[in-house]
Structures are given as C-alpha cells and as structure tokens.
Length: 239
Ligand SMILES: Nc1ncnc2c1ncn2[C@@H]1O[C@H](COP(=O)(O)OP(=O)(O)O)[C@@H](O)[C@H]1O
Ligand SMILES: [Mg+2]
Image 1 (spheres, rainbow, N blue to C red):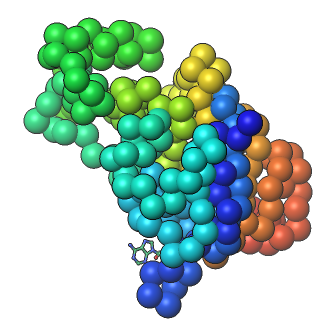
Image 2 (tube, rainbow, N blue to C red):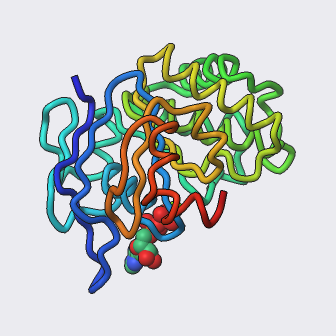
C-alpha cells in the first residue's frame, strides 16, 4: 500500500505556479528520485509534504489519512521527516548534541536516554568521535549528521533535498550505500532530490521528473532518461 499519495497538489506564490497538479505516490522501502531543472518546484514539493507550506489546492494522504492541512510539527510526529537543501547544523552544539536535540524534540526522553539513542544511531550510520565540534566534521559527516537528526523521529517517510551536493565521489558512494541501507533496514520510504544523474541511476527505484511544477515523466531511471521531453527539459542541458 502507498505510504503517501498526493492528488493534484498545487502551490501558487502570487502569480507563479511552483507546483502544479502533482499526483504521485510512494511506498514503504521505496526510493523515489525527484529530478528537474532549477526552479522546477522540487523543494516546494518537499515543503508541501512536510507542511512548511500549505497547498493552494489538491490533497496529501499519509497512511490513508488526509493530512493536507496538518501543521508541520504534527506531520513530524506521525513520521514525515526531511533534510534541508541549505544545511543548518547548530554550530554551538557538538556532533552528538545535534542529534540528541532530534531525540529530545521527538518525545519525552531524559538527557541520558537521548544520548544513548543518539550514540546508537550514530554508530549505525558510521559516525565516530561524537564529541567533535561541527566545524571539525567533514562534509560527509555533516550530511550524515543531518540525516541522523531527521532519523531521530523514527520517520516512515524521509525526503532528502540535494544531500549529495558537495560530496566527492567516494563520499557519494558511501552516502548512496547508507541511504539504501536505511530504506531497506527500516522499511523507510525515501524521496531524493538530486542533480547528479549517476546518483539517481544508482540509488532510485523510480523517478518523477518535474518541469515548471508539473510531472512530465515518471518511471524507472532507464526509461525516463530516454524520454524525449525529459532530455529536452533537463538532461540535454545539464548532464
Ligand atoms: N517562498 C517562495 N516565495 C515565492 N516564490 C517561491 C518560493 N519558494 C519557491 N518559489 C519559486 O517557486 C519555483 C520553484 O522553486 P523551488 O521549489 O525552489 O525549485 P527547485 O527546488 O526545483 O529548484 C521557483 O520559481 C521559485 O522562485
Ligand atoms: Mg531546490
């Protein structure tokens, strides 16, 4: 059964239509790629699903419940998590504290319990030396920290907004393996916004292509990457 389904989801900013009639669904354990040129509406789409923006029209259903107008904090509680395109670690806190904050926000836990859970999660994600300041972390570690922060809520659905940006090719490979493992081990539905087509090919089960807020193609990467409209809109220009 689909974990999340949108029907004719639309978002206007004044006269601009950022997301237009987007109907899609994602299932548990599935990794869905969301691609499209800059300004196509990818981040807005994630903002609509996580509740940062309310839709102008259309609906969002999560586990069969209409959550179209549910506030963001409620959506986080029922299992919808995301990372941000512009990462925002808390620089005054060290690595483990950044992730403890995720656990403390997620529910009634003591500091001790939050530390234990955060340590366990970090270890499972290959993060070590947990008392380091954020400024001492590699880009890969910062990105993992962002994902760990999101995972603290034990989400069922996780959106990653350009999580690979700034990583070198070895780091990217490691991140691909990590995201695949999280999806599999936790039966997590993952939506991935990503510009690098090699990453989309390696990582995703299925792809939707947005252009000017609309879905112009959908299917496995191998199929959509051969679609004439997609090549014209996107691949021809940048890949
Ligand atoms: N808060 C906002 N106010 C006004 N326009 C916005 C806002 N957020 C996004 N947009 C516009 O919506 C369109 C889609 O943006 P965005 O979702 O960020 O695209 P993408 O992530 O695919 O690059 C762009 O034209 C952008 O300028
Ligand atoms: Mg974006």
